[in-house]
Length: 224
Length: 187
Image 1: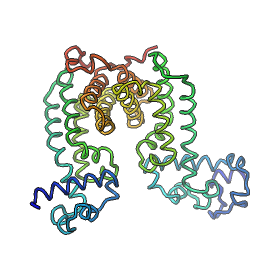
Image 2 (image 1 turned 45 degrees about the horizontal axis):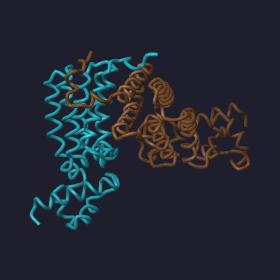
Image 3 (image 1 turned 45 degrees about the vertical axis):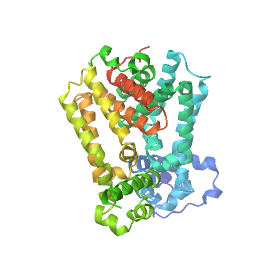
Image 4 (image 1 turned 135 degrees about the vertical axis):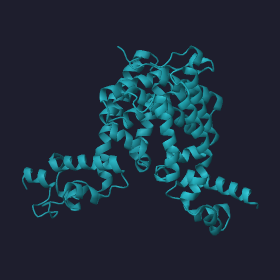
């Protein structure tokens, strides 16, 4: 089968039948990775998972959206779960790299800001995946969702969550609001959303002392 | 058991069940069994799960309507009225925490008419915090984030010292609303 046919049909013969000459077990993994149909499947599956939910997207919906048979999808992925793993794992790997790059708690405000800037950049690149990981109940309970939850806990610790209850609340709030901004407003002006999200997270982390007291409002500025 | 006590028992049992099994995974029969009441009584009283949900979320409706009305009437560019709205939102959610969890965190319940009604009110509040329907993107994001800050703290820090949670999250929400675009993001 030529690459062009593979690209056009997702690895299916011109008659639309699932006709891989070799079953998945006979095709070297590296070769399957290189088939362009696989990437197209991931793109379509990602759009469907993120728009209608993982559980509400049967394999049939993916194959229909691609215009191929289910067997053609099975040629590349043993199960729907494998597609989710292929979509989400690279995002989580990049977050791991970010977390690993920090040598310890980020006490210095500039270090904290730089770290959050990189986290914002990562999440905004894959805002749809972030929303899926946080908002899809099936994905949240999936090992991938639990891995993301563990990463968030690591990030909270780096931001000082373990130092006190107020710090714990502020770090949770900073991450939650940052993720909401990127997830919910992801379709708006991306650069401004990133800037506002980061500004919000910093403001939350820095909101201590007088800002928490009942008289804080008296000295606070008016909104622009 | 008198009718009020029975309704109170159904409310407690239903909120407990919904918290653990979710709206999609709970039936009126499950709740009747857990409350040790006949199915027919619940059907006569609530009709179906959506009717029960309407009853469960009703304590949130009036306080949120009042809060939204006061926000509409207030000058939300000034910190003091702004703070009153944030405090009111926090106190309302804390007073009805289990219901708030159902409204804010159960995606299946979110599709029902009673929960959509509550969420529409919250969206109105959010629009007012942003400065109106034509608010720019920065203020829209800040309004959404301020309310989300309150919601996540109410649902997440249940066992913590509530006065500390209140002070910290209201301070954080005020910081979100009052920090100007670009503040803290410079080089």
